[in-house]
Image 1 (spheres, rainbow, N blue to C red):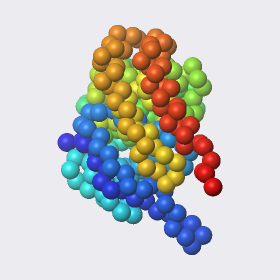
Image 2: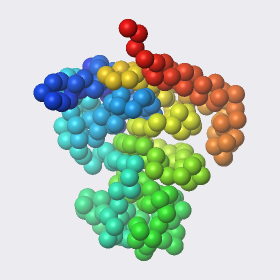
Image 3: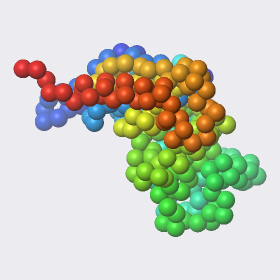
Image 4: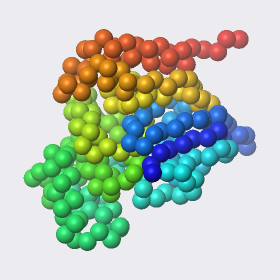
Length: 265
């Protein structure tokens, strides 16, 4: 079981002696093996939601559950990929991927097989013995994603994982993630500022309001993807040319633009 459930979640931070609300009443279910992206204005609490699923922060009110159990701490059922390439600089590609497997006590033979499988899946052949500083940003993030998937987590949490990449590399990584998600489906919570990225990757897109963050609307992209047979396209630009994609992107942009309007006085 890997379903993620937010129930009446509120989160406040203490700042200069006052409580500052960050999230206000989040109710959301991410179904097992569903890919959900969250978009919203800066500071709306997107990353806070992800960190609560990871067990790195906790609600002020309400509850976050994974697989029916309340989240109390980080756990091996959840892996996190951050925007910055959080690799060990003194370890090779293979050693970085192996790190979590060693911690889980996976035997040498099985560990070697798993590393080989994800090196191939992520197109890292020939770089097994390279160190992070010898890799491009895109390749470093491939290693980070391989390391997360290799742990065989029920839940994959991705916080702007392609945000630090150049546009061309980001596009390639989005296409690779789609392929990987099809071969190795997981329950994924994906945080992004990029509307096109959210529409391309996700089964559903959650649009949040500005702080204090609430859910403005949830868009079922997966239903449209299936109806329009987006999966027949291999490249992101082919999908982006579809009228249905353009319509969804425009709709989400309008929702976000509403959040940028100044308050009425």
